[in-house]
Image (cartoon, rainbow, N blue to C red; front, side, top):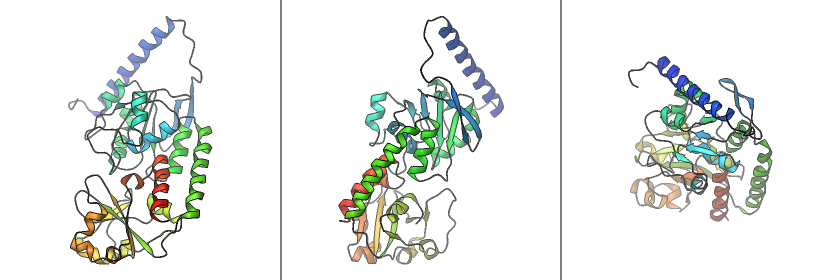
Length: 332
């Protein structure tokens, strides 16, 4: 495959998929089977233009693990899914705990993980819809492979700037024609949010959101990222000056965090209250407290350090619901 040019590969892929469709069509003509209910297509608007998607998709391949949970919430059959979710799962191919049971029940296959999308595997799954995009490295891979993927099946990429769970849920519900389920899910969230808002005691002081990563390099979560934005609705005040305190480092437009020099730790992480989000393989808040560099910081001295799991960092619907429970427990 490495010897094929991009255009030749795409042409080859189209031919293979076309042959498969032709074989299926012939087989269908030789039977008495009736067309499936809800068959046909409908257009959806994307950043790539209008895409004709199935009216009732039955074999969806999801190329970003952070998006797969929504499909299960919407009762959509997921033929295969990438398992990577930042800080939650790695490259081992294990399903994230939040939707592992659903994946097992549906017989969802694991999308092989590599430096690029395994388009041959995607084609072998015979998808009627491919969903990619979103945030993180898996998103970039599907964006890079868009032309090859769209030669296999209708492909929709979730824009990288749609980072809140509500936006992602509504967008994906529209793509899979399940808009009728959105109100039910959001109503359940609103009810839980009201319950939590009535009981939670949000700190009056500014809060720093620290990302504990496996590489040990200090990182701060941006105040406009998904988690701080969620907590702001409950009265938590994120420190809006963290980037300036770090010397205004360059921040990738698609990133919701930034690195800073360890020498600046006392200046950047000087908030009276700190929420630590440990990613997979990283130090917990308790472990950080044992480090002399962190032990001298105000929040650590005053024992105003709290921890939330990686599922709270860029929460999908299930993640945001469990995060509300955790906030209620920790800030009564």
